[in-house]
Image 1: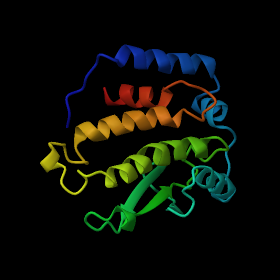
Image 2: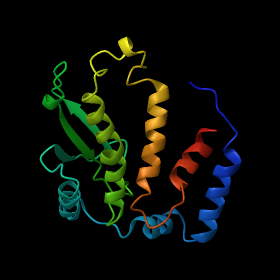
Image 3: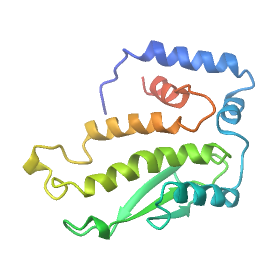
Length: 180
């Protein structure tokens, strides 16, 4: 439903080829090098608890494991009352199926850098701003606009690599190649 843009396709293919050449064992050898050994959702609990405590948000977010989630993780919120951001509650949903390549020792932290470091902090901060209840009044796009979502996901892709062992934007490059 969008017009593909090809100006970054060469760079995306370069990253893809580079990672394939450095990790000839396949994509799973890349995941292991970047995110560590696979762990279970039960093993994640302590890592997640430490992450939330270190970021001083341990009481602010509920964590739920959801097999079959269509992505590795997702954050949702509920309970918002107009002009009362303190009533908003957040839930991070984590796919605990075998297909989730972030269920790894370092990978779970990378996933939380993505979900918490980008989406939670942006949403929480946005809720504190004067424009939150009426973005139109301040000439701002709706929070679910395509432009804002693209920007936020771009930042989230970068945040995903903050705690990673490697700094290749392999997953965004792969998605870019697939979509174009």
